Length: 360
Ligand code: UDP
Image (cartoon, rainbow, N blue to C red; front, side, top):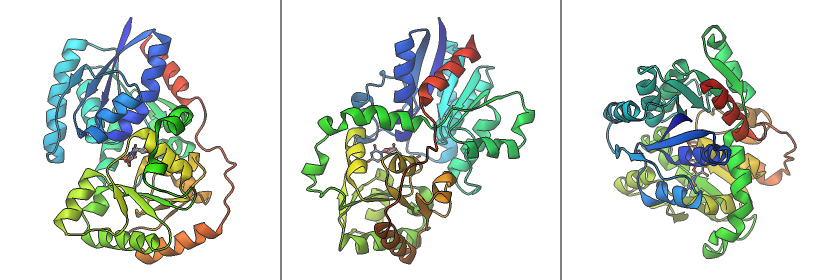
């Protein structure tokens, strides 16, 4: 039986890998070995997803975290290389744009192991973002690029990828499968709406964690000022990322909104289903909001999910209090129709078929 190694380490990667791991297991034709790099390690940033989403237990946990980008990437590469020497897989799968993504891809490629990049071709065109650097480099050394959208395919074409010996596929966004599959169970598994005393369609769901916001005090203060202002009339609930918590504590900022610990996926899906509007700097949450027919205020200067913006499902407002409030009022006043299908269907199955062909 052919073998693949999956490298994951950050919360959004656990969610995406849950979909593909289930399909791999059901097909029972390829063996999957999971490496957890340890990049995210808190129980509610990691273990909860493995438990709730029934992701197979990682065979290897590298426990690399809480260090500079170069140190983290280097240590991960060294440890992944050792595992690949033992496991000798036919391909390695990486997701998204974190240090775990580039570390896995680079270690495998140097050992002539085929690399599959899921969520390929996305670009923010902001080379100051660590994620942008990771995704461009990972795309360049991959053998199979699984793109989530036509825009991602176009980005690769604009960079000349059609001239390279790499398979490029528009499979759609694997997160859509995650939302569809786990939404079937979330109402029974989660009691967050009741526990947090939230009124359906009357609260705002917010998440803030991106380094470009947490590392910029002015932006961070402006964003939280906007959230506090909205909270005066509509409850704003924010599951707080550990990085944001650490920075806010350091700056002695205590936002007057409903702050909770990071939540598991079932709770997140119920928050998405029942909220009125999403305010976030997360990549994944922008699409999950769309899949749940909610408009998103993106507190970043750009987004990789530009089709959400061009269709009016999301608006990019940066770290600007006034723009956050204006957009909130506009979104509240519109009854947006969600009839377009932007990100494909049965994505996990399509990705699985392409990987199967790549290694057979
Ligand atoms: N998420 C979650 N609980 C939380 C916050 C986020 O389950 O408390 C999920 C969210 O639904 C999405 C993913 O984590 O699927 C997004 O992760 P994050 O925002 O950390 O990363 P990004 O998508 O920006 O790379």
